[in-house]
Image 1 (cartoon, helix red, strand yellow):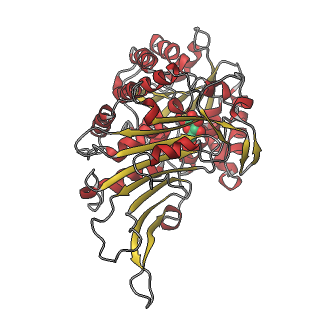
Image 2 (cartoon, protein in one colour; image 1 turned 90 degrees about the vertical axis):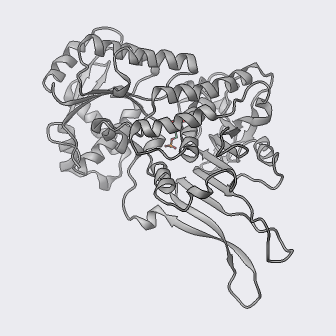
Image 3 (tube, rainbow, N blue to C red; image 1 turned 90 degrees about the horizontal axis):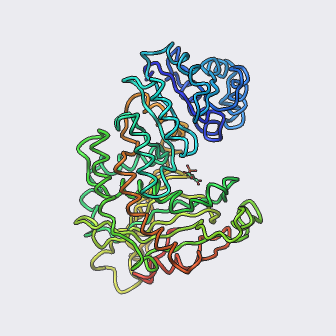
Length: 485
Ligand code: BG6
């Protein structure tokens, strides 16, 4: 479905995010025929250069980040014809009149400002946008993470953006919400009657959410070292996943209906602070080791600060204190340079109350494994009779749905959906201010307790599943409980 004609203004238009994600995503939407004639994509950055030179940069970005068979000459030329460039300084008036003049040519269009810059520029850019009269009724602003380093700075950023844009024109991106498999969580839970009656502490024993990466800090060491895994992954992506698993059914897919329910989950998270941080959290930092790409250096060798205590791994036992979930641990885990790249949610059901199959081995409980990436799919592990005349032998077998075999279509990148949702004015998959701040409210005391602690993060070998203490964390409540691997 073609959207309304728009001007997409990308601040940080020559940056990594624009080149790697935003421009390829818009190109894909273009070849799928969703971008209307006349729509413009305007790259903005400080360095003066011509449209022609920027178009060459965009072409190089497409070539670097898309597969050759996706690049059709005619389609690329058509896409490039939509591209414009304006040199603008976020902190002074330099260049802004040029942007004003260009945007004036499309006054009635939907106008989106995508701030793919560092968060310190969000305030100054918005201020200039406001001062130059660029906010129309149909204008939206998109902000990328990190939205703050803590509650205080998140509030300051939200205030700065909010001085120029009303809340319903602000789109806070969490790209996990645009992933097909993450959207599917809502379909799975609320388009099937089968799970809901079991989706509570009477039937679910625990939940695991893992977002494991095999990559290291990939040249982003300077940013990462001021962030760490808790801020980089848990405050946003993992808590959003937790919300989608734990929330009550919203009354509709309306943005506020969904966000109201997520907010309630965030506000129900049991606080973690100095009194319990050492029981409920484990932080780690990778050392040199061997993974799929061979021998890889340790974290400290990849960054400037040789005494850094920044965590590259975190495991947390979280709890949602409400009637549905009281007593059900949500084990959260994420890290860099782990054994594999895998993001998944495991819903572990309770064991059967009584076995009629004799005194043999205990019967493993059912598990619902929602694989977000890679090998996207859903597996429901069941007990089945192992066929044969040898009596009633049970075997654990999955009902197995793989996206790749069930749907023979390309899995679009998260940004493809999100970028056009902004134009459509659909904010369901974006975070509201109160959500971001509620997430920080839970995360801040953990950060403070870690900072106050004498202890350094636990070392773990690159290519492993993190420090041994993470295994102890999950076994603490039940010695037979393991992380899903
Ligand atoms: C980003 C983090 O938000 O998400 C990165 O800043 C991380 O550190 C990335 O690598 C993971 O995203 P994905 O889509 O590759 O799982």
